[in-house]
Image (cartoon, rainbow, N blue to C red; front, side, top):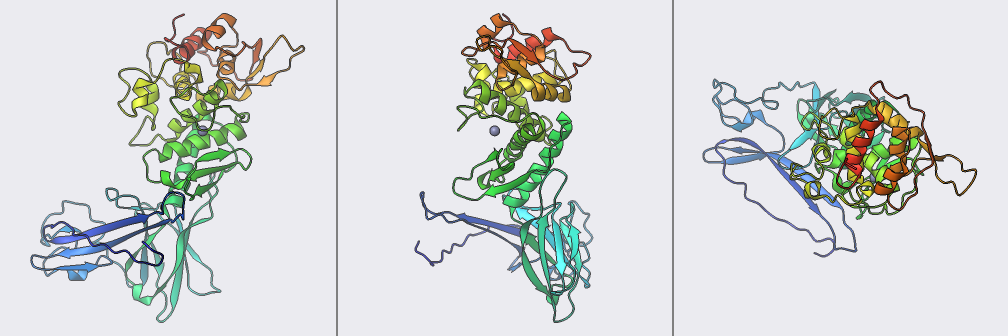
Length: 461
Ligand SMILES: [Zn+2]
């Protein structure tokens, strides 16, 4: 297609029984690999009225088109006296002539349809000098504003607010002008799903992670990478999370936001991050390095905590980590069942599973620990090791390797066990940390739990 050319396509909507239906269209396009890169996405919705002999499209829900005696409700036509069988949020609400109703929504997929952009702050402004009136979008998605006077316009626009955890004040909704012809009407205002869902997923997961570990950090700044690369990462330099736009709408998005927030919490509230070799790219199921495995394994566990929802009470990879590498691991993703048992201590998924077993209350073979996440976070934060007798006097170093953290948890070191599990790095000669051990603290239990997750073949030695 050449520059400036227009592409059109028409689709036939399959026949439906007489009624009133909402039709959603979502279209996106991109340029050839290597550019020029186009980024364009649009979505549109119309209402489609189907009668026995005819049809009609309207942009908005229009109850005036229903014939006498028919209930003005979405779906198949129903006699006015018929009993309700579906919750009706569109047809039955009386829209008042004095107000304009703005339904603030985002669109991801046909199956999910338009979803209310809960939490978005919407303003209405009636003159250049006047003050804006603000309203926050609730579960219904609909905010109401006073109508503009005859012959005048009102401006509306919206942003996501600043929360305790996440920077806000980002515009997610373009400014549009409405005149008095919109009085008594409900109109759709689409927010950018990329910005809105990034903000919401960060906020949701940050809250859950903060309360789980009982450690908090300053409000996190964030942006969306709209480039072709669509990269996702936490930057220690700018203390900012970048989320790739391609993640939006994927079921893993909340887990990814939570994972990055895990890095951000680690860096600002849990003793600071570090550079790890073999980090780019790194994979849940591939051996990288002891340093990378600890850093990413912690973030993966945070991702699981931060992605717990009503529909997914274990968090996105929760079941996978709980049954990692066993035949009863969930069949998705396949690596979860088939993950290698070699070099476990250098594989981030095994380290995530270790954090989970230290904290969760699931009883299974080799996992007798259920410590408070606050205690485990304190050890992770304050653990220090003395590495070598060769450089004397050696000073204390902040933990960076998976092996450091297990000896800090145990408060002792066993060089023989170290050599069997952590090949390639010397056993530390001293460990210390500042956490208060819980009442049920038991170094044998800790040993079994970490051997189960990090040693080839499990806990037995
Ligand atoms: Zn990471």
